[in-house]
Length: 343
Image (cartoon, rainbow, N blue to C red):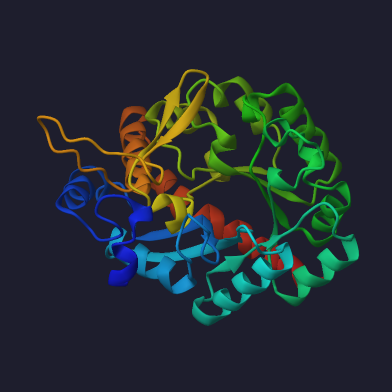
C-alpha cells in the first residue's frame, strides 16, 4: 500500500492516495470490465519534491499506486524525468535513472530529458550509457519568450532529432500553442520532421494535447499518414475525445498513459472550458458539499471511465483494447531496444 504519510498529503486532494468508497464503486462499475490484465503506462513521471507542489515521486511509489488503483493487473512503465524548480536537467536525469534502477523490471523503460542547448554528442552518449529509449522535451525550455506559443523546433532541437533518427529512438512530445495538434504550424512540423527523419519515433502526449473535443479530428487523417507517429492518452478525461480517437486513428499506434502519480493521482478532472481546458481539483481547489457530498476520484479514474464509455459507444473490440493497454507500447520499446543491438 501507499505510505500513510503520502496518502494523506494535501497535494493529492480529499482522500489523498488512499482508496475511498467512491473510488471503489467507480472502479467496480465503470473500469474493471474494461481494464485488461496487463497495463503498460507510457507516461509516468519521477521527480524530487516540488516546492509548494507534489511530494517526491519514486519508482516504488508509482508501483505501489498502480497496485492499488489497478488491482490484479500486471503493470509496466515508461519513465519520464521531470525538472522541478531548483534542479538542473542533468540532476533530474540522474535522480530518475537512480530511482529507475532501484525498482524497475525488464518491461520498464526510461527516457532522457533534454533541452536545446545540450550537444548532440552528449545526448547520444547519455542515451546509450543509460539504456534509455528516447527523449522527453518540454516547452518550458523553449528558446522563445512566450512558452505557451512555442514552436516545436524551439524546444526540440533538430540536432537531437538526428540522434533519434540515427538510433531509432522516440521523443515524447508535449505540444505548445492553444490549438495543440490542430495548430497549422504544429501539424506541419510533425509531418516534415517525421518524414525527414523516418527512423525516429514520435509519441504525442495527451492525445496530441487534445483535452477537449474537436481538435484531434481536424488532423487525424494527416496523422494516419505518418507511420512513425504515435499517440498516448495521458490525463484526457473527455469521452468525446476518445470517441474521435477510437473511431478514426490507426489503433496500432495508440498507447495508454496516465501522467503517473503526480497528476493521475490527483483528485479531480480535466474539463473543457471555453476554447481551452482546466484541471478541476488542482492543489488548493476548494471542494464544496451542498445537498450531496462531493467525493472526487483520481484523475486516472476519470480518464479510464471516459475511455470505457467511449469504447462502449464505438464498439471497441477486446483485441484493440489489449493492444492499446499493452501490446503497442511493448512492440515500440522492443523495436527500439532491438535497434540498439545493431548500433
